[in-house]
Length: 334
Image (cartoon, rainbow, N blue to C red; front, top):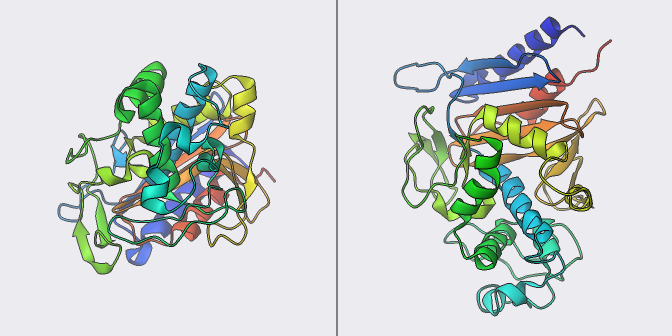
């Protein structure tokens, strides 16, 4: 397939994503080897003014934050500060016992990172179900990564935001990537973020949530980034530039996700996952859904070809939209 044909297909996929009220606007940036990056948009950044989306915008990346959190943990392992077999009780004594009714002496850091801790998912204000046996099966849970973030802070004596900046963002030159504090707005430039859900996930009319305080998502989903920054991070991560070989292999060692009512055709590693497209191609990286924003960042296993996309609304058919986009972006040559 020619580069021109591939980019035409990508643009058509972007147009479909926002057709018939599927979302306010979408951006996508594709990078392939040493070639020039391609950037495309559809829809709008601001429903009030009709302003178009553009390169360099900051947006909430939701659960792709987990890839950063897992990378931080593994870098601490590389430094000898902790091990993946350390228990939660070692670093957070009594925390899961008191708040979740689980046994922290049986849950390891590896269990947290690959979502096999048995701990349930939960949103603020919700009462989660009881825990299950650690190591038995995959349960996608923000709780795991909230605990991982607390362990990072305990092991370093620093804040998670500072560790992201010091160990990942600054070394890679990710000038638009950060974990906001309480009440901090998105940095300029940014698209407006829109939602059809309230803070508890209940359906409401479309409203602007650009200034919402989503700091509760923290290590599980609270970060902000840009398309170009996510490319640089993803390519470094997939290409082995962030971790020693043994820990890089740990990160990409996966567990099955079948039966978890999660994304189909996936396997989960440590903060990242692989997803098999309907065409049969397998990509690596992750996605993120948070109030007002949907993000996907995936590429070939070696990071030679990557695609990052963001939708500044949260009511689109997440799986269908990004499957369509990535099929277009990674369609094999005839």
